[in-house]
Length: 337
Ligand code: NDP
Image 1 (tube, rainbow, N blue to C red):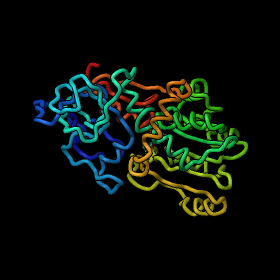
Image 2 (image 1 turned 90 degrees about the horizontal axis):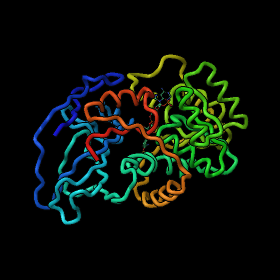
Image 3 (image 1 turned 30 degrees about the horizontal axis):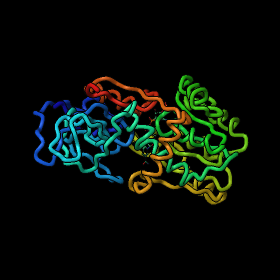
């Protein structure tokens, strides 16, 4: 059983020596348990936070722990009455080939699912995050302008497409021309702006001629600075993530912008609300799953995935995710289907 452990805590951006690959014997399931074989492992930005020691919404990983992560697995051996060998399940086995489970927290996937890995993306946690953050906190109305960054990732791409279904004018922000083209041509956004290009704030202002009613916050940093002056009265800001800041080691240089933010919140009567998807909305998963499965089956929501082959390549792929090297939902194929 190959496992990737947290070898040391990163200072700033993670490096390959923060991870260690080890091989241990495969554990055998006891009565009432089952052995799961990982087929797909999800790589997500939140994992960076768990590598650090500081306080957060969930406890950090300990040094030597198997890296955490959502997985799509097949039952390799079952001594559990509800599972048969070959069943597909969604679980959280982390960065390893095999894990024993007593069934807690497992979700059985339909055996005829065309793309089981999509349960880690649009039909799972990131899709759920997009759905609740936009609909419950963003409260989109037809004709409003919605801006979302990390626009081709699983959260941003889904946010923008749901925004279009609700009749919004949707402006994406992404890194690079190819991602921007994808957002417009495949995802159906009205425009997408490259945040790496000089003149990005001016271009954003030009595209948002009527201001911004909803800013779905995925990245923070310079993108938020460009958005702030464009927000309309009564703007809503679901604060989902600040990936541009996850590798920071301190506050940025430059003037303190907090007074400007507070003044803008007051004068524009804005609402900013953070949320942690399963903690705050776990009870609404069924509603999401029903709506998203129908949209997805009808071709109303497009989904792009980037599959990296081999568990041993997970660290490098994860480091790249925090730099925007992924294009679409990042998944590692750990074992054969
Ligand atoms: P993505 O697959 O979109 O990957 C992150 C993307 O962020 C990169 O591809 C890159 O896209 C962009 N990015 C990285 N650095 C910067 C930067 N400095 N400036 C601007 N953009 C940058 O991730 P997800 O869709 O999985 O997640 C999106 C956000 O949602 C994250 O912040 C994540 O933490 C958050 N999240 C929050 C949850 C919650 O419960 N609150 C649950 C799930 C996700 P590009 O090249 O286009 O810039």
